[in-house]
Amino acid sequence: MMSQQQNDLITRIGPADPAGKLMRMYWQPAALLDELQGERPIKAVKLLGQSFVLFRDESGRYGMMDRDCPHRGADLAFGRLENGGLRCAFHGWLFDVNGQCLETPAEPVGSSLCKNIKQRAYPVMEKGGILWTYLGEGEPPAFPEIDCFAAPEAYTFAFKGLMECNWLQALEVGIDPAHASFLHRFFEDEDTSVAYGKQFRGASADSEIPMTKVLREFDQPIINVEHTEFGLRLVALRAIDEERTHVRVTNQLFPHAFVIPMSTEMTITQWHVPVDDKNCYWYAIFTSYTVPMDKKKMKEQRLELYELPEYRSRKNKANDYGFDPHEQAHETYTGMGADINVHDQWAVESMGAIQDRTREHLGQTDKAIIQYRRLLRQEIEKVAQGGKPFMFLDQAHARGIQGPATMDGIGPTKGWETYWMEVDVKRRRGAPWAAPVPADIAQKVSHLTAAE
Image 1 (cartoon, rainbow, N blue to C red):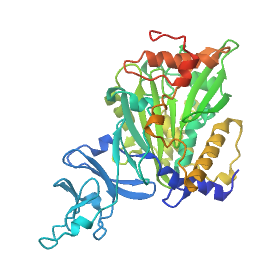
Image 2: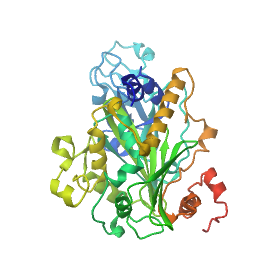
Image 3: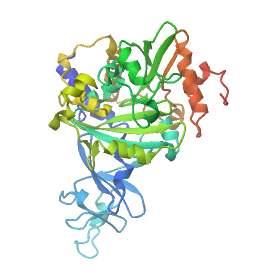
Image 4: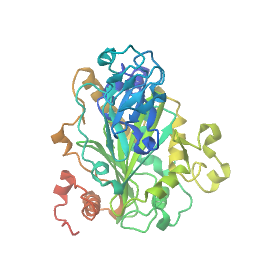
């Protein structure tokens, strides 16, 4: 358990809050690229407890500014795109993507007022189908060269979903390997050949055993956690028999993302982005190592659950997440349908808007959560002392942050330590795009050729 003061320290993300100051030192997802398509590419954005307007000007440049017009505070999200910028609908003041006022048309002829007016603006960059922004001071850090950013556009797909809870409890469910055997338990297995786009529904690598069967029947994993150059690596081991062990390798990407295997062909890189203290979005980039992404199918699958424009789940606390007691008795552990996003949403939202960690009791399976919180507190303190936090990367260092390696497969009980690396390296070297092999992994499986 922790004190209320400690809980506030690691959850609150306002501009004056210690964790908020840490988060503002990293690029943050502001919107999906899809959200600024159409004839009026303007979007109101709430991020880290602040309100902004995100837009694309007539020449295709992206900009993000504080949402209140610096004239008299009207809402710029209702502005007009014209003459090279965003024009306030109240008095016609016009701003470019850098926040510079270009025109104050109601002022007298010859007025130079606009030259001295500048709205606070923030850099915007598109990567992996997401528009990213930097809210901090000074030069932003470089992006790591992880797979979802290294892969060609055809091999990635981005989506998001709203969660009505604090960002930290949303993140922590992704670094908890034990929960999948219970929260995501299915009492019957599906045909793995139709598992495209569905997490935990395919077969584990080097086997015909559905992942749902492994998770259901082997529910006491041994969890190893190690610190890496990007955060934490988690290895969950489930002994199938004396000869075989199920190995699942996932990662925490500091500060607020995780990287996990979706199937033998895909990984998910997922950020948990604070809207404010009591709401967050998950932003995910799915990356394929085999064939180009079927984006139409991936989007259709997800729009069965999520409603636009807010990307809010159709199953939510207002309708008990679709809970069906008969289904809970016979089909799924939760009784909340087959989409694991609903299961996760129920789990983290049911904790309350901000989980009261003064009442929790952690166990051995929570070791990654314990280590992550320790790392988070350490980096919050570093920023409070005026330092640069972990994963605030310069260009040279960013090139060395690759991968991270992920894997879900059934291999030898003796030798699982190198087995999972070999599976990951083979997938990378067989990819139709130049998927980098992380240096620490490459050194340990150097015997593999590119052909293998």
